[in-house]
Image 1 (cartoon, helix red, strand yellow):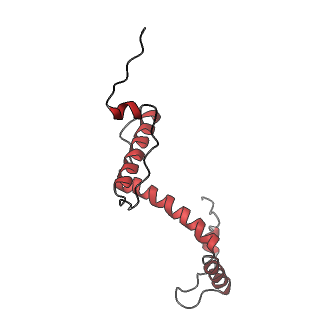
Image 2 (cartoon, helix red, strand yellow):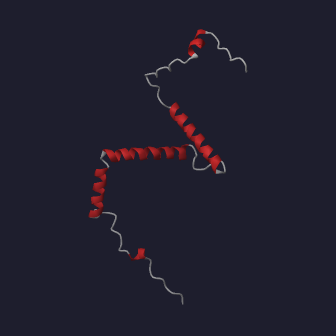
Image 3 (cartoon, helix red, strand yellow):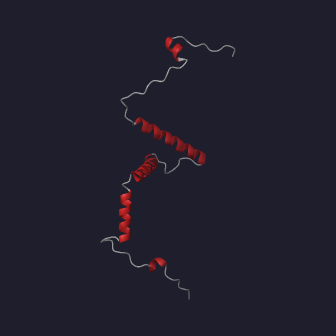
Length: 127
């Protein structure tokens, strides 16, 4: 006759509390403490960072098919990820609203004067 194994420890636990009613005092105290902590600026700053990262990962996974790779091998997979990241950045930049204030033009370079006057630069001789 095979030996009977003792019951699993999970089956020896007391039954759970019913789903209705008030939670135990320890759980309620924990919930109150965590909810109060969530109102602090430091917690909200940490949450903003996490939320932004999770949003970006979600955009890659669902919006750009990054759950599966088209290519075999780590170098090609890495290249796909880099190109997808570039595409997402271009997409984000193209969706930005044009600002009212235009950026200041770059300062003129040494070539700016002769080129704007209509004269052409000569190539160096001897090559």
